[in-house]
Length: 103
Image (cartoon, rainbow, N blue to C red):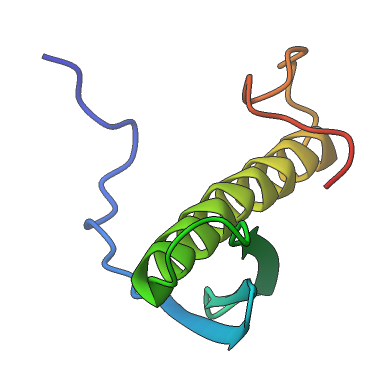
């Protein structure tokens, strides 16, 4: 079994995530604000209902929120990558295959 190199007690942290949804038919927008206590990160995403689909707002909410959560994951991975480089990490690969240049 591997043991930690320090005798530091385990830390418990709480991050606060707020998800805001707004609907302006046929568009639904999700905005996420994540407060880590050290940083505040944001992500946004949208969903658009086809004019041929039935009006079911829950679907737009789920799509927009899911996309915003994926985008937040990318924001966090980018932040970790920058932090690793700042402390001189030898890691050379991008931290995620979900990396997208347009975000």
